[in-house]
Length: 454
Image (tube, rainbow, N blue to C red):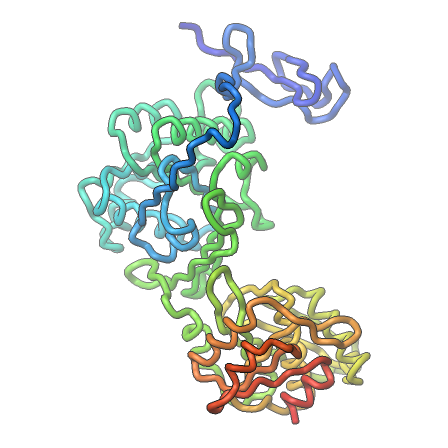
């Protein structure tokens, strides 16, 4: 049987060339030729034969079966467990713990269900054995394969028939039928298409590990994220113990869920009560420190917002620095504080931080950030036991946010008794007041500062 030849097909006009060219001769577009395999003179397509169309009312939808991996935080991000035949992509910075997490998940799966094949293109079997011993992740049904050739990988999968497959990483896998180097656009796309066809045809659950670029995005073609069912980012500073697994795409569940882990000597351990971890060591009655209930998926996380305001040295231009919050949002809040409340921040350096390494993007943190900055500027600590949340507009108004009741209940559970929130007419919220619980409602930033910094 002759080996398939490599052709280059224009994605815009379909022009086919025997070698790569910068500009397509058919449509004069630059960088539009893509490498494909040519079988008997025709570019190979991964599309299957078209099925007969049928009415949506005639389709029998079976309930989605999920298998728990035994790692609760990982299951939470996936939507409750792994769906058979799903293709999951996990990306993250080097050294953040992707391989550690998936080796633990593979061990749990092998212990509960059946054969697991862990494919590594970056580490030898001896290296993986040493890590597995450290993690206490040894099981006879956990198979290790150090291979990068796509043909050999598929042959091992057909031979061992695993129920769960981990590929670490997709950028190291290559097909000998393509002339390009491993990690190139065509190689990554071809490997992902092969694993996708395998998962859907056999029901095998496959997890792909992906490299990331300097900007933090997944390396390779964007089509890689479109092909898979779930895309997760594993975040965290390698110098700290906190790790966060965040789903940005999930065809089987919510995309707002996060899993929180703590790295230790025995690997990654899920944190069932992350609010206590984020608030551990928080100083009391210190200017510039405000507690904010962040909404992350189905859970509420109480975190500490910190601000430090100091005069700019030698009268130079003031410096602004934000860690864990959006820099432009912080600058907007500083402008509102200066315009609406008369705080002279134009001559002061301002530093804002979210303690614990969590990143907050929701506008509900506006009131907490503004309160922390004003507290540090006045060198006055907020009232004891205060939790603040609410969106701040350019006119200085405090706007309503979602899930107010859940935020208050989480604060009460952790011992806070004062809640600074947007003014509301909800009777259900007012029922939470009493027995030492105070709801401090504010319609404007001026009212909020008077209540929190009397």
